[in-house]
Length: 448
Image 1 (cartoon, one colour):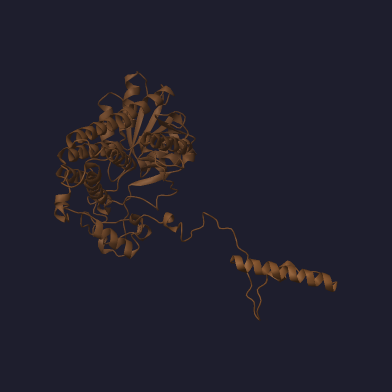
Image 2: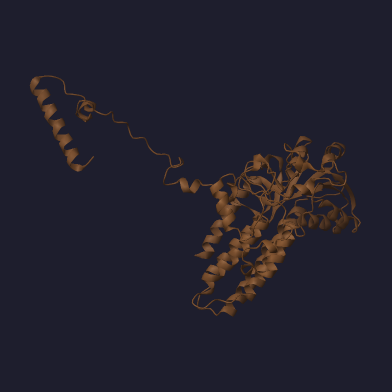
């Protein structure tokens, strides 16, 4: 309503009240005066306050799902395929429940499928092949290998004429990251490292000579690796030992091959603590074999079992058993993102009232919040879990209704984990959101 219309409405109300007083009648109701004139006046709906959480045209963009999680949308899938640095063949028999996630056939020659090979550093190309073959696995190992490769990329980098290092180098790093993401999705530790590296590049002054800037960035990569990964891992172990995570007579159950858990077990053994280790293993990676071999060579009493047999172990040793697991990420809601099978072990341990302790460095803390393993996951090659020796599933691709799923991660709710050992001490997993907020504020203060 314009200013003139409001003034006309006020004059109409005054005239109606004056006429009612002179005639001795009652004044008309305010709603009647506000009603629009005409033979069929339109009913005016009351204005309702807008909820900022309701998707509207202004904030709908903030609720969009990442394109990598909309593979079931033909437009999003076409856009991803065009932007990928590597031509990947889509899975011939995708699992419908995970149709929103990337599902590819195993590529025998990734280098031959590169669209523009000159954009990828040779060391990063080799690293991608090792990621694809699972030669390098685990959050810490993948992050360290990526940082060393990026260090070599920065050393070999030369700024083109007409631009500056802070502006051009991030585009080169992005190409390497896109290539690695196409081969395998980045884990939480790798995303944190990439984010910190880009921050360091953005604050480099354009006036600094390229050699000095590259030397500075390489030293900062070494600092991140030594402080946020290596020193953090040792601190996590010290905090766990300080709170007696392993004591005399304990039976320690672990799953997979976590480098931090291995460090903790070796530390307890070197301190003279007498305990036993149960290494749980599972297909298709069988990472527990390497851990079992490494522990037995040091004289630690060990047992091995498949994940299908953990119920018998927990039932027999429930009074002495503790479950200590590694993590790929600690989410904002306190949930644990770990190797697939972790949730089953923790859930069964809760049933037998067995303590579960997770080891997680703070650079693996994520501000994401996930409730299940379906919204996001990494889908591996289904051939890896087909037992070709027994030939039971020989020719499974010819069986139309049969589809095989090989996921890499699962989500363990916070109610199944008693404590998380990090650089901040032994704390409940639900305190992760406070630590994430503190880290964000600290990073913001450093940038200012």
